[in-house]
Image (cartoon, rainbow, N blue to C red; front, side, top):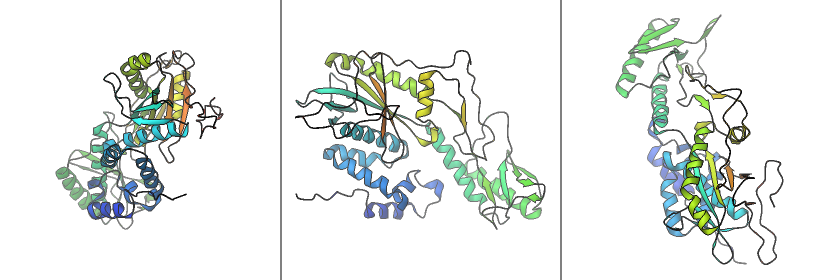
Length: 364
């Protein structure tokens, strides 16, 4: 059998081009995808992406190639590819964004005769655009503080009025200049107020903590993503997908499945989805040591939020956010058009794979 070599769109030449373009920029000036695009530890990610694009028509592969390394479309692109991979693993032939009655579901699983067997829409739960700006802003300030030649740890003082906003570039330079002056003049100072921000010097009973960046300062910056972790936003988006595509699923009498994944910044995982389906009263927050405000969340313990899948939704596919981006099914027992996700065997052959359900069994 002739061996076909995988085309490397994201191989050494791609890595070198990304490094040439961004390596000399400060971290805040690089795409947030830069590490995945260049670091050796992410080579399995890039190989997986190459393999997925190789399965697509040229026009679709080129479209994904252009979107994959943009911050705001990186994870949606990965999850769309992961959903296609899950369907292929389950035994289906698939097509991307084929039109049916004016609607273009992300994936259509096909029967052997080419007719639709299932429509699959993909949703990515990800932060707002403002989140990316906050992260870059704190990264920029972090880099400036890291040049102060005093080996202490500084952090922002807390405020009850909400999460702090990162300073603009001009203000950042002014407040770091003031912070540098105060720390050099009095290394044992406990706090510095400058240009609307109050910095505290981390200390214990023996004095200021030593900077891990010694002999320079270390800034415990806010993460930019602190707050409650909940799958309710994801649920609303899934319900919206169902309303949009239910009619064509009914028209062609096929199951409608929504595949979902979560950007790492959201903190949402499959446990959060399962708790929402089960109506469990659990409150979760995510935060880093530098976060001074993590928000709040109120729930009725007697009647916690609970998601009942609409009957038009045949099931949910949860997509992991790390290679090989495996899928886990949550089927709707009350679906108008039930599905097992897996394709029927063709010509008596066995399936190439199946998706695990919540017990780790194979769906039949």
